[in-house]
Length: 416
Ligand SMILES: Nc1nc2c(c(=O)[nH]1)N[C@H]1C(S)=C(S)[C@@H](COP(=O)(O)O)O[C@H]1N2
Ligand SMILES: [Mo]
View 1 (cartoon, rainbow, N blue to C red):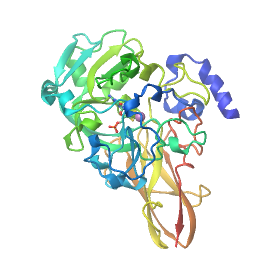
View 2: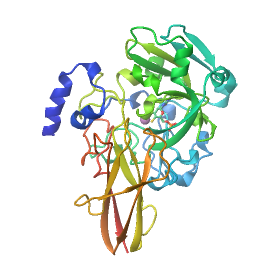
View 3: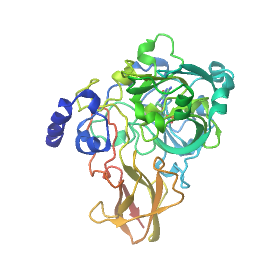
View 4: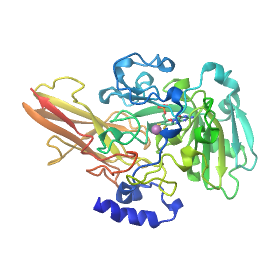
């Protein structure tokens, strides 16, 4: 708390626009920054169903195609992947991928003919509207990124922040196919002068009775993000499912989930951040007990890793040879190394990266082969991207955002 106050003072005195969660701010100051702003207060009653713990009922209709056993249902707008179910072959299968909806998923009827889906591009020299069919002629690429909710790890905070109590599973590594945003911008003659942000808007249908200004999903990120961003229509080899934002979604590599706007209807280069609630108020990292748009937005993801096996979910661990497996991400930089501890962080051993390297925005799988005798173990992982490494402790913040502390993410197992 003392540290928090010190850092807090520093960041609060800075100019608002300088409060980006770049790695350095993040690891030094950010901790400080706690809690992003409130978001859930605008959730309509009809989908507000929060806090129903996983009583092992079926899945909500709009995702009845997903694998029930891979998922923890927090509510019908927050569905998490089990720690052991994010996939051991790098990419997370769609049937296992988490869902986070602020607004309900659009239906086939609301979407209509997918090829005729429209997205308008503004704040460029020649503003234009493209249909999906036109975008598919304009350019084509595939890239892997991590989709991770800002609140992933919220379930470890002791002050019980409001929102889904995610542990590790509001995250996935996804192969997206679409058109590079840069290609789209070039086709529109380039970004207009004076633009500072790229603002993406969803056209989610706002449930009746809700103020659109409060309900609209619009997210501004620093303009430079467009150079790596993508308008995606395919996810892990299939057309983007409605639940994941079909037929078209913004992908902002290295940036938190919320910036990856689903059901994308508009991208505008703007001089100011959007004034909608989801930008101005929500997803702000503020100290516990404080909120407001002066706090940093959930933008860049920090370096992070966690163990996926062995866990208590995967059953009893027998003594003898064990493969300790996990995933590690570098945030906006490439992940460089991962260390694993079996004694709660007293000693560390270097783990080995395995599997393909799909670029700096994907996570890497790692493994440490070891021999465990009977007893209790606290298994932790600690990733570094060369510049930053995971802190031991979480950065306390109001809404439980951006948790990358290694201690809370460790797993305690009994070997028999
Ligand atoms: N249009 C729209 N985009 C959205 C959201 C939403 O509710 N509506 N939720 C955001 C949040 S908070 C996250 S974490 C990710 C979740 O993506 P997923 O549901 O495909 O896993 O989408 C983001 N994009
Ligand atoms: Mo999120």
